[in-house]
Amino acid sequence: MCGVCCSLEDFLTAGKIHGSSDVDCDVYAKFDALKEELGVLFERGEEEYERYVAGVKCPFQRGNVCSIYSIRPDGCRQFPNTPFGMLSEDCAALDRFKKQRLALKRGFVVKETGHFTVDSLLSVKFSDVQYTRCVEKLCKVGVTEQELRLFNMLNKL
Image 1 (cartoon, helix red, strand yellow):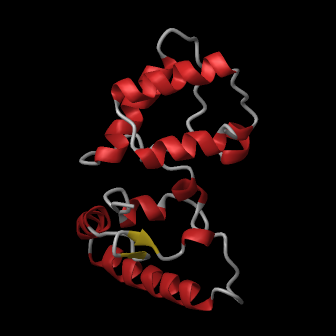
Image 2 (cartoon, one colour):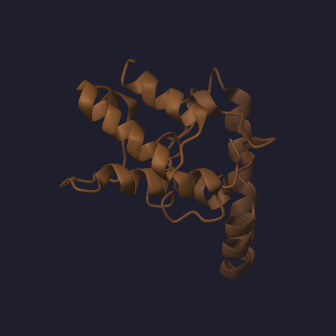
């Protein structure tokens, strides 16, 4: 919820919005206006367009919170396990996530998919010993109370 990762460029590459133009008409109207604005910018020059898209925050970000969270695109839903997510910089939460990910992978052969969903995470079941080891590893590299609550929720503890 820091909003560091929420750029216009990332939003534009994240996929389709999961809403309905009938129900979420304000969101779609704003998105249509954005497409028009970007089209005009692109016609002025590709360099200006690229500079703008890379330097502007996501238009649906309000006070570091996503205003379309329930209908956000898949790329935003799967962040940070996306091509643009793992390249993000200047994000303390993402730095912790990368350290935690490395700590949990250490000593194991792991197949990386580049994305995850809550459903796929819920299908993983830890034994008590595995769970305790994971928590110990996470605590060594730094885990917030909120992150630990999420880990517990996903592992139904």
